[in-house]
Image 1 (cartoon, helix red, strand yellow):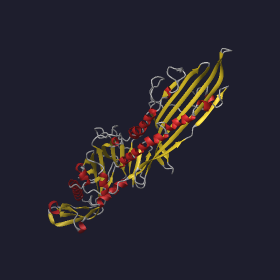
Image 2 (tube, rainbow, N blue to C red):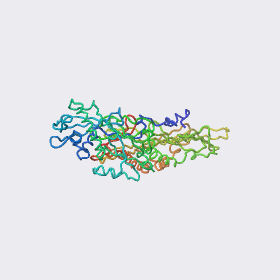
Image 3 (cartoon, rainbow, N blue to C red):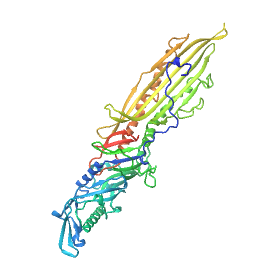
Image 4 (cartoon, rainbow, N blue to C red):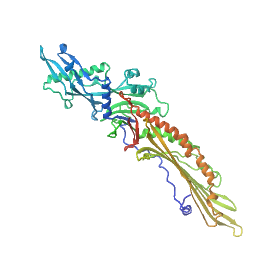
Length: 561
């Protein structure tokens, strides 16, 4: 053992201390109690509305009213034709369940009778340049797969077909005109080119009625589709699919998900927050949306079952060093020996195994055993054998080969073996023991494996694995008239030790082939799930462009084309 008495003999220093038991994972800025926030960039939302209008799913012309029945008509033929530009949505965080719908009229006339009761004179009022803004509600309304597929673009249809109705419930993200005030415009954001309050009021009322009519005929403003599981998931990945989803405006159009579970009764996350998480402002060119997964979910519900637990099972398969060198009823000196294992209260007798312990950056594991015993009779030895097995999993942001920060998981494992022997011989002539010197030897072996999450050309996240095996570091020495000059070869069988290190169930090769390979496949699927939480109605669906650990400690996925 590296005690004060033999520190000089060992010529080294102690290995790192145990990870603190019971330490919790770092708690970053919460996502309003939600597991996943999916935010659509304003530019993407504008592009979707433009695509829907171009394809005819949103109207580009207005025709409402009847001159004979109501004394007013907006639109008509030729010069009276009222055209409307691409609708604009403004999402204000102050009204999280609403949006401002802006309609800009580019041409055409509103036709009215010139005076009450006088149908011989008709007034034509140009509406070119008029802007009308309503505050409208956002909603997620249930929709069948057949209804969603009806008239869907090929890209949208392909994405929707992933959601089998036996396992998923589909919702359309729409503007809820039925529960919106379409009788009153937002005067601060509207611009009507008339000083006649009656004419302006009638224009507002008729356009509001026209919008309600669109909803009744099925031509509602559908901004996308979201799906939740109808039945609980059976494996880790399916349990990370949406169990509930709600919508909110926060400068961006946000979908708020609980994964594998329902939100609380008030429609908010389990923490009761508003769900308007501070999604990092600003989008890189080509970035259509951003999905932010809470650190807690990523660590506890993805990394732990798919990476930490499988490694733990392999470490449990290793023999407990406490039982390898000296029998419990042998010459073990219990006062000088110890059995130190992370995550448990280990003694020399209870046989518990070390466990991974969560810390601020990931997890740590340590199994540290020192055995002190005496053997022999006339030629006796006081022996110490120490083994320190450590394993760490650290999550951070690290640059790749091009210097770009990437979400990174680093695996590190080390094994230190130390042997110490003090020999003495009983001399009959003097009837006492004569010190024959001391010898010690130490070997330290370690390996590392870096996992970095990179986007490929097809819009999927792949895990780049970089293993690194380091040669064993050894040192040794003798003090006094020890029986051999090469204590390393005498006290440590390096061939056996190296073979055990490289061939055990938790070795570099075994972890890479049997654990990391499956984990990498699961990681690709997880981020594909995140990317597909909102199906866009127009144009191709965005894919993964980059994943990183953001400043809040959450997992941030940039989506684009």
